[in-house]
Image (cartoon, rainbow, N blue to C red):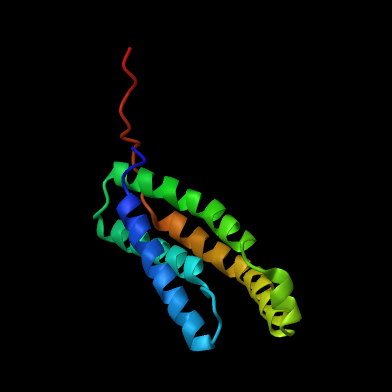
Length: 135
């Protein structure tokens, strides 16, 4: 059931929006700065911590996987609302920050890929306990 995990997603989104607004105030920008990213990072960290402790049932994991994948279109929709033209006219900081984050992201892909490979080898293979279809 995809309803599982909605509360966690909502909490992460609200905390991310709050932190983004605070960052905007601190930086002197009249906008939310990175709130969606903070919320997404929180969601990933909390779900990972709960999985490691064995606190998530299979249905909850499936629901959280669904909502985690739905978060990407939310990020795209929210970034489409940003006024890119005004940011570029405001100075070169926006271009430098954008280009820098892209370069850093590209540099981190091989590192994260190696980390993921090590974890996959260490995890035991567990059978799939999904319910069988009713005939």
